[in-house]
Length: 349
Image (tube, rainbow, N blue to C red; front, side, top):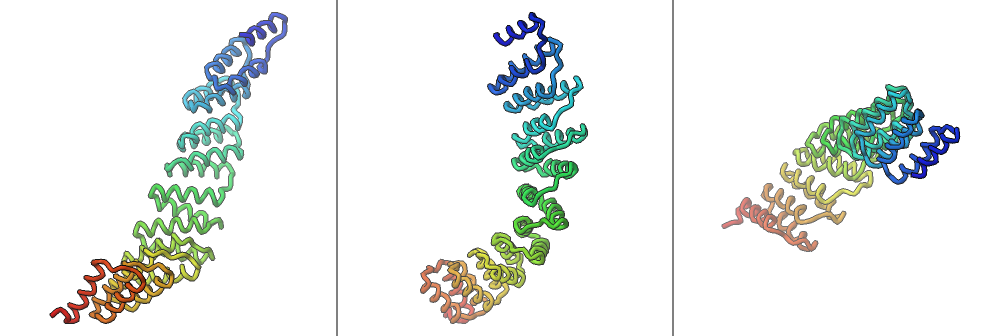
């Protein structure tokens, strides 16, 4: 152990080793991820009557950070405090990072809170490290604590950060929480279209048409252009809920915005009008679907079904012919709908 030899030699020659003498050795061992050796040298330094400083503790914590040893890191923090050494922002950042890398938002939030209670001012690294924790987790409650801690520390949350939080809430089926964060964004003027659309689609997919429609209107009133996903989800939700009129108005607004309306969305609206027995509106949207090259067997069949319900056999047969001319083969449901029209018109004798 040549390093120990020279430390002893220093003392023998009347030169007192300093904390730097030991830190130099520890720094090299940390780079090699030799945690046991770093712990040993910290103990040797204490045995020599040399008080470790924040740099020394940071070095050992760096080793724990590399191995993800949260328990040893906590014990080191307690040891450091018991010796009257004030942890630096770097020290707390590493403590937070140990938990952030695992997606442990509670652990990260606890250290962020401890950091503030010690009067240590968080910095940009603290912010970035804390954010990393919840982006790897679906723990909504823990994530909220982190964001609240960051706000309490004086950080201004970015639109991207808000959106990440909203996405996390939606992913965890906590739409009400997502709505609260979107409301906060709207109040401070940072709400963007993707954030609105995440909430709109979430409510639409959950069947809450009132909420979905309300947020869609708020987004449009704010002058923001929504995504195709939000409009498609809303149209399909309203259509599935039996509100063909509202579904149609939303789809029209989506078209005006130049969004790509999907085939399932057209079909949902066509089917909704068909179920209401309104063959005219169903056929109108079939034509729009054909123009956009979105029509398929389900599109035509839904309108033919509406014609059958209206006992309009000529129209049903004409649509079947148009369908075949478009290169779309009829299926059993299509033919059954035409046969149903025949029966309703007395053409079954």
